[in-house]
Length: 191
Image 1 (cartoon, rainbow, N blue to C red):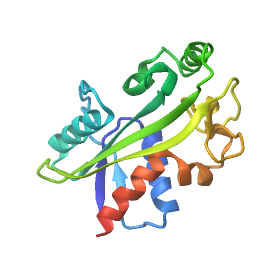
Image 2: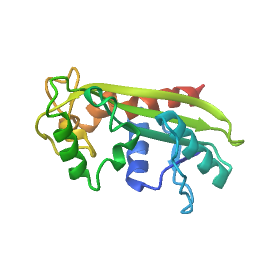
Image 3: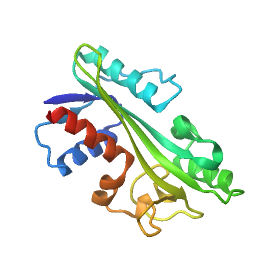
Image 4: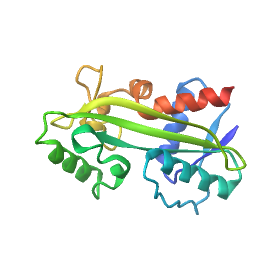
């Protein structure tokens, strides 16, 4: 079964298909939407933005479409950067630097990665949605070379002081917000 994954990022698509295979699912393949895919993400929550993207991919293709919207929520920053995680600063390193500066005055460094996934059917109706979370805290320094985004400063709960960027792909997929949400979507699809 082919399902449109509502992203224009081929690296994100590749990662998603690798996670699917690592879960032992071989009969589902995610594909990119047409190049004209460019939704206006004006929702106020991860769930709303995920639905906007899934519906737009479906409108362009008429196929089952899956979208995710994800980000980092820091307790001391009232949930920021949240839905603005990718737009928090101009570059990945600038986003990390801005985050580390923002949390510097706080003792509470608790944070969570959030990923909301929405699957719509051929008619554009929501078939399934789920929000996965990965709990942790913001480190004081960067560590690790894996992953992307805020992974080098996110200390994963239960991983002995390792950042998300220090975990192997298999370890990351087992505990990540995206891995948890995708697992639930795949369970739904297999029914």
